[in-house]
Length: 592
Image (cartoon, rainbow, N blue to C red; front, side, top):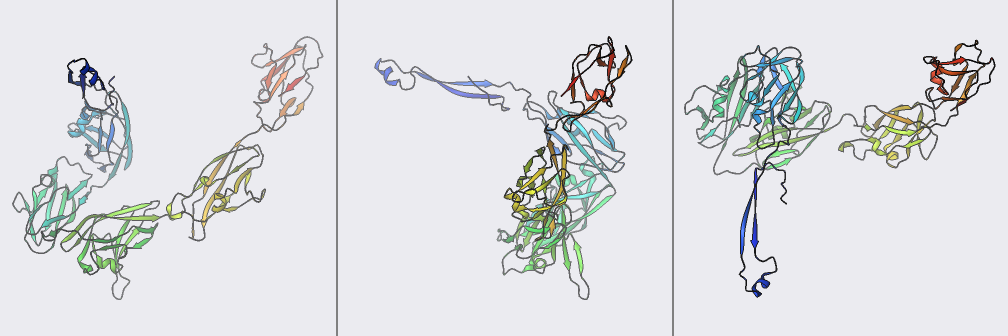
């Protein structure tokens, strides 16, 4: 039997050897003087593919658009892939629901709304989003290959028109040689309705001092994104110096942005990299600054000139910013937020800081290029480890039996952060339980208002229920460390109580019922009533021994006799006694 491996291949093959003798039978064949014959057979398997894979999300980005404007929705923002080999991704069908802050329309005729479109429409620029309403919203898209369905949320973010740098790595050029400037080195992003790459223009604001920028071997003052993608933009070095820079203005419609492109000149005799002696993870308290020191970041050797080692910021940190503080004589100094270039000398002098700003983050990073004379290192990653402002306490709810106790293990008081491993903190009850208390097993029945992490690890702490009939309880705690001067935010633990039927039912009313002859009389809770601390009125049931002078019935069916009824039916006025026969009778009920 041949078993396929469920891959997307359309064919397979294997070889067989057909022989007149099986394995180990060669000698037997010779004994009978029979000629040994064998042949090799190639078996080809044709695989009939089936559609057994659902579409997979491969591009999932926030869609940015100008406020009250429009923009093409393309594969750069939304794209799915169908893993089945014989399926054309362009035929994937999208169906959208209501959009809170705009609409999808045909690009060729914006009066025609689009509720369904194919992925090839995204590729060909036929789907247009028009904004109207809130600045931020999401809407549902269903995607199908005709058999399988999947769904996703497309987030729409609205703002004023902008153009931003997406990538700016700079150039590395051989002395006296050419180097191509492409979108690998320089690219931009915008929220405006740009239909072609020719609409994004780059104008040379300040030309390079040690070379020229050429487009198609000539020296015009501008070029487009299309020229960058085609590799038509060249930087030609004039053979002097080891560093160069030129400034560009990026223009998209009426929006401008200035950007500097840095050029590092390399020499064939110096094809080695700058040695990074130190690149350690920065540890910073949440919301505070930390200094980049020589012990944390050092480029080059001890005898190198620090001012010649330059750090160029390629990717800014997301949850903070870099700051250069320059002291000025006779003043408090000045701060430069997010410097794009700084030197080893700035680091050695203590001028460079990372300032953490975004709350509830664990890590951050930025990318630097390091240049020291003829040597260079690209995309050096500087990691930042953020120590939380609050101790990150996670608590777990639990269940306890009525009147019982429950040990509270350390899994119920998790502090999921490496910065607080082994921290001997204490847990303080901000709001104690109403229907129970927390105790130390070494001191039973003593209600605690605080206990230590060590006691929890030693399994000494328990919750004890007070045996009341309450089915829910809770208490609020926080972690506190006097050593670090930190505490957690208050956390509430909820307790579910499993009730135990340990209370006897009590008759609280049992009066003689006086009725008119041949009448129908309602039985009220003032005449017959029972209570049970463990049971609701629906669960308190009576068993009636049939009387000879009438019968019990529901008010809605007085002619139908009944022997079982509940306290709830009495309380709700549903139970009646229907009199027939003699004028006196002793009646009895059994309560359960």
